[in-house]
Length: 536
Image 1: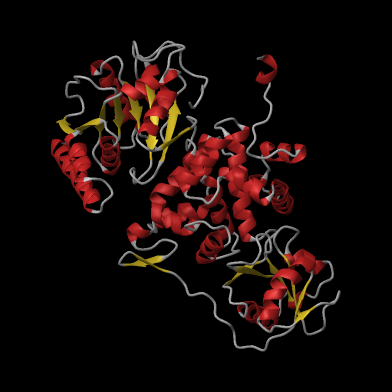
Image 2 (image 1 turned 120 degrees about the vertical axis):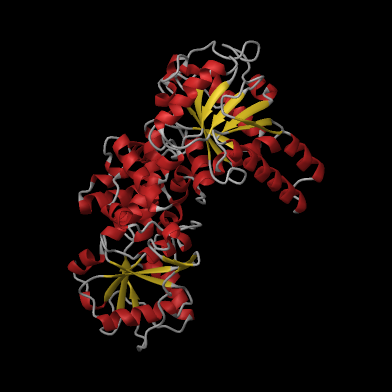
């Protein structure tokens, strides 16, 4: 069960199926018919999932021809799955038999347990549809919207009985994306979220309870990565390919933030960023970037226009080549941090690069200092290190798949080339970035975790649902809260405090959830004792 959500009135629900104190699983278990209104990509995906899961699916659209085309498309998908051995021929035929094109959205309902609308993302269009549905649907029918951004409460407010409306947000492509956000509005009946969640599980997908707040859960949590990436770009710290390579190789993301923005399209992504920012009354953590607005106005939307942060030829991304080893003589390398001498220094020694072991560097050595969390390289140079041969390295995550090398303005280019050549000799790819208070990877990760902690702090979703939504909906290797526990919440707090102190930017203000749990020694994934525990 998803649990209560604080809205709606007990007692609403299909008579004999679920009521106050009743078992909401009865509705999900006995639901047999769903009407999908809207036969675009999302509607077709929902129809395929539902029919494969044993439900009779009524397909409806204001364009009657589109209904037949959708039925043929979904049927062909079942045939294809059977041909690939992913379902039996008998199951494919049975699933096709459960598809029923009914034509117009308001075609008379004989019996329908759930309506899911997947029409265009426009408030008045959806409200008008639901007003009409309320008048013709059976009393036990739950009305669900697949909106990705519009408030469920505002859609439901158009009805005489808003208690029967909830959000049921699937992700594209629906059969493959296993996450479904269940979104109760302010007046949604209490039994509906759990009933919908049970139905989602019956179809083989994973439900999470999401708040009826800007971005719901997945899009809200996703602001941490993309807004910080755009901030790094706006500071001139790194280029798009640099940020993406670090995100993939160091953080383990499947796709970097810039290529992700190119995939979704800036015409989609930037308005979402602005909507979430304004929806949370200009919360600095969600602040959009001037870069996004400029690219939107310039038509640099990404893959769909052939150019965004990257250029695309025949749909294939053209990515700049990795830096090669410069033609220069190798010089000794000296590490300020002993642990770096034991890790990266060992890799250099194996590559026959001299690593100095003394407490002070020689006159020939290039100096590598920590650029991950302590302070900028420039600040460390200001504390007495020779600026002409001092560079930074990001040791926050180790040096397994990629090394990040940080350059500050006083560096002698020849010393920098010697350091780059030495690091490339280890066989690891090296990304060269400009000096900043904190390295790129810790900044990206700290932003992801801080936004997740902010969601938990506001009790918009449970820690488990936050992590599940991010893993399944965004494809991150870990959810933000469990990721914070993995790398160490205190280290994450240090990154945010360093950025906040260095820049004064409130976007780096640590979440109260993070600071409180660090102070108490609690995991970020643990809710802890609530006042209600004393009153039960």
